[in-house]
Amino acid sequence: MSDLVKRYTASVFFDKRLWQADITGSLAHAEMLAAQGIIGADDHAAIQNGMAQITAEIESGKFEWQLDLEDVHLNIEARLTQLVGDAGKRLHTGRSRNDQVATDVRLWLRSEIDLISELLVDLQRALLEVAGKNVEVILPGFTHLQVAQPVSFGHHMLAYVEMFARDSARMADVRQRVNFLPLGAAALAGTSYPLDRERVAIRLGMVDDSGKACVCQNSLDAVSDRDFAIEFTAAASICMVHISRMSEELILWMSQNFGFIRIADRFTTGSSIMPQKKNPDVPELARGKTGRVVGHLMGLITLMKGQPLAYNKDNQEDKEPLFDTVDTLKDTLRIFAEMVGGQLDAATGERSGGITVNPEAMEQAALRGYATATDLADYMVKKGLPFRDAHEAVAHAVKAAISHNVDLSELPLEVLKQFNPKIEKDVYDVLSLRGSLNARSTLGGTAPAQVRLQISRHRARLA
Ligand code: ARG
Image (cartoon, rainbow, N blue to C red; front, side, top):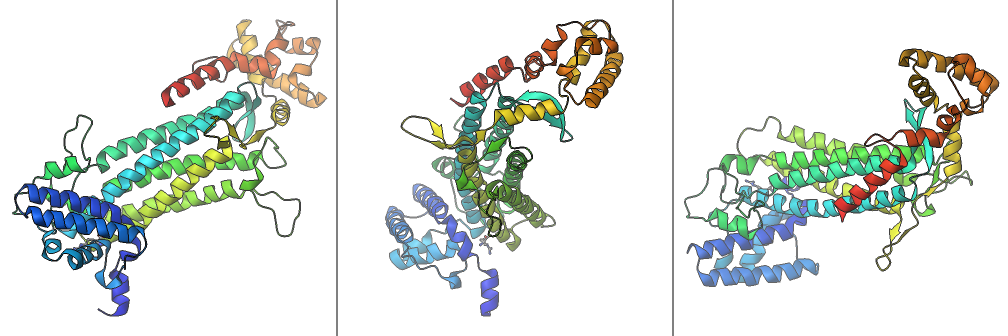
């Protein structure tokens, strides 16, 4: 091989990141080989000792990774053999790098999913905290980015809690399919050694809820499919899309034209030329990085397409997109929990330094767009007018309000009566933002009483 081809085919510079999973998988395999009498107890002990030393070497940065040894698996195995001789050469009995790497990626991804799940809980808690403080704060709800109806800012935050709750559930679901053992499939067809695959699975925690071993049941499939990685990246992409939508709102809300919120200076930067600027770099980057994660999903799914059974070297290309997806998602979730909800003081359980809300600006914006027009229509319907007629009457009322440059609630009763004689003084109760908010009391609606119920439900769920 020329140096160029060596560099082209090697993966050690990125797959060394799997070292811990590789050693864990090897130790489980060796323990089973010894229990089955395939290797001796002395060999097993030597392998354990050698791996302990290799672990120490890698952790202290003393391990010498070699390009010539291609990947993480061959690097660790070569060092093991250097340290313990023939026992090291026996480790690979009944195993291939094909089932080894599939196992390593699954073990690694499983622990990353667990971390991501914790971060998702943390972000939901941060959002709940903001929601809890802003149940009575009113902002305009938008459709088509046009003022539509007043909503509670707490309710708006809870919409994101719902999204991240589903992201959590998706991660938990993917985890179940990640947590299956390929080892024992060997190169592609299984092996002639009397392996106990279930023992290895149990040892590695690859079990279902009832404790039953989860073992891949077809050797060709076990070594070749990376659908679990694609699925994970799809779940990560959806989660990043949620982050991206929230980013877009944060960016709009902190612009001068909205002025709804401020985010702490440590998440923004100034401009090198315009001294007055405070740019929302973090949400903008998160929105941008969403493209990167969605790109990894496209990369992985295209990588798989057209591969014949069983293992092909194409699959070595699964690692970098997968690693980068995990890194990007974890960093983003961590930063967002802090940026939105503030830093958690472990001692007091209090958060500080999250977004600052400007209720006056939000309320003013809601007043500008005739956000209570639907409420006026509903009022007329309650007085007996068919909804379609009420809709039209209110359209005229809004026109009148626009021409007088006032809000609907500022039109005198005589004027309102021109649109429908049944309108009485009590109309002003529903024309206020607060009256409108309180009226939306269906399950899942924005009425403060409903929002509080939802907050308690989420708190109980996350407790
Ligand atoms: N580095 C390889 C990968 O990431 C390991 C498996 C190699 N197997 C083989 N037969 N060349 O997929």
